[in-house]
Length: 196
Length: 61
Image (tube, rainbow over all chains, first blue to last red):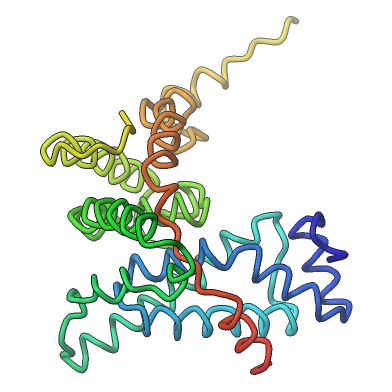
């Protein structure tokens, strides 16, 4: 593909100038991180797919309307859009007093993307992912939010603070406690994640 | 008359122009280690939505 080694910035510019193939490269480049961020936050595969689509449709609309201010952090910008959509979803859900989707572990494990692997790989892959998801899910919401925004979106702590409406020190503090809690949970659960 | 940078001292004392986060902030110093930890922990946790979903988006626009 002609854009495979192009920077995000160049792809954005190419798309704005009318080359539609550039946006496909951009979405494919970042699809896993954006989708994983949404899925880990929303914990429901169908909803995650819907919000993933909504996120990139919003991204495209913003690019077309010239709202995107390129600062060389395209992925962070996309993750912030996804984050806002997730927040909107939770607000609507709260208003509707909807039932929690915490029972979606089976959904995640049976992801259709794993079907190409052989059974053993599928089971190991599923177990590892399940263990890590359990760890992440045991974090308090505000700590999990900072961890996911930082890791999957690459947001700076200033950006995380702005996004979550807290001070930088609060965002840093949440991350510090999240790391302490994760290490503690790994030890308590005697997980073999080799991340010490 | 020699220049005396007294204003620097004042700014430091009363906190004016003091950034919210200085480079000596302990959390900032530890953050590189934190990022490395998260990277090792979360790197296996990647879910791919698949090409079909991307194609669906592209059809909608």
